[in-house]
Every structure is written in C-alpha cells, then in structure tokens.
Length: 137
Image (cartoon, rainbow, N blue to C red; front, side, top):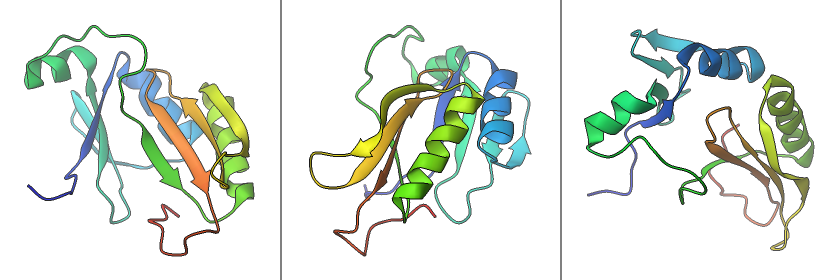
C-alpha cells in the first residue's frame, strides 16, 4: 500500500450545516453533490467530501459514537503567517471552534487549530524552515 490518500471523507451530523460552513465560510466549491455525500473541488489534491456520520460508520463497520480526540488531524500548510490568521478568522466567523489560537509554535513555525461544526480538527501552519513543504496554497 502506498502512502497516498485517494479521498478524505468526513462523517457529519448535518449535511446542510457542513456544506454552509465549508462553502460560505471557507469558500470551498462543490464538485459533486449526491445527496448522501458531497465532494469539493480539490485543485489537484486528494478530494475531500462528506457523508452522514451514521452512514459512513455503517459503511466502514464501526460505531458512529465517539467523543474526544480521535487521533486524526487534517493539516493545511500555507505560505505566510498572515494567511494562517486569515483562515483562522474565516473559520471562526463560519462557526468553527478555535482549539489553539494562531501563534508561534514550539518547533519554530506559526499556526493555529480549529474544529469544524462536527469536531473535525484542522491544523493550519506556516514555516520558513522547509521550502519543499506540501503547501495547500
């Protein structure tokens, strides 16, 4: 198995609320809306989509119940500290919960973390230490 992700599916409790958060709040564009699932334009990266939390849990053979830290974080690397601040502000205005305000990180970078309305964790980051990072934008 290669270290590659074909797509990322997020289980959500309220499809319309999640679509609004990502489209109106963060500016994502819907590529396909199948009713039970939604996929966003990926700009060449692994596509991100939604599926109902219960339906996705049933599909993969696990319980939809869960709380606390899942051990899974989506990372979004940008080219400036200012862009980290901009995205954090967009997410907060859209209804995100700030988990770690943007600021200096212990390893020398700059970043912040928020959770979307379903608790999916997004870690935003910037560092000038490595010019070959997998930048999202």
